[in-house]
Image (cartoon, rainbow, N blue to C red; front, top):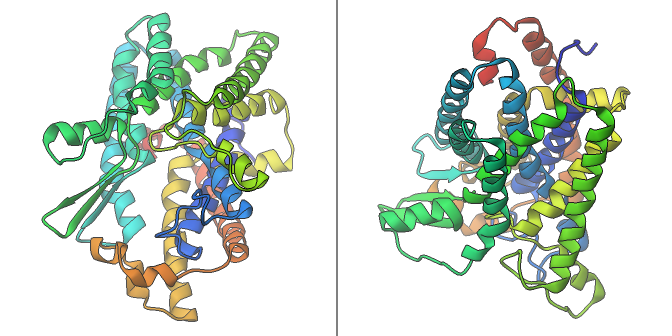
Length: 393
């Protein structure tokens, strides 16, 4: 039984779908052949099935970040600006702390923290802090800032830093994915450059206006179609022109299949304009299609969409544990799965892994395993709304 709440079900269903898909990417990270060393989007080494497995998970982070902004707007409907500021700022700090301490620990199981990875939780936390200040601006100004950050940041692609000065590190955090080495035995992976994510969350915040109680459903549907098809048209036009919108232009390959893969091989770190168009366009169309759809399947995804942070940490932990168990059963040194800075680049991991078929089986198993746990937590949250700390989990 799904508890009745005032939450927007279509938004929670969409969030749940991308959370489930996200688990596929993370299972691939820990289980697929050579996943620690081979890029699944490298056209020289990938296969269509592997490329698609990676490409479908591109939808996760943008939707997650965008809807975090939408949730912030909906949360603040009955709050004063100072109250919303306090919530967003404190939650942003909390998420950054969780990224540095909890998330890194469950991804690596390295209590020395020699490998520090700044991923999507960090990006959401920092973007939320920025949003806490942006809410004081007029909505039109927020819209302009969001569009500039998303549509204009690819103008900065030509600026590439190489060192480890303070200015270099700031630039890496803002716009250039980078691995930093400190004291010869500590690695820091700045994995989610921030500029476009801040813009995406800002636009997600404004998107919340479409879901105010007095907003006309027909008008909302019209805008969802406009934004959905508009984003997709923008993608195909700009990608076809091949002059702007992504760090890496597509090229004609030696086969038609590889040429198509090249066309869709857009940049995630940082997310290019075209990356966000091809991911957010279908997301808007999804919200249009599932505006009033309710059945057992949507109820299934709804569960994950209502406890996203809880599910995120739990599923990474479970996947990592299963990877260790797999190595203990099927052979291999499971200690390599303790991802210290040394083990992370250990050549032995290059030959570790299972087939893509196994990856999909493990993914389905993980999702089914976590469903009843997440459902119980969802019900607990719904029945304990007076507990303020639950809003941070």
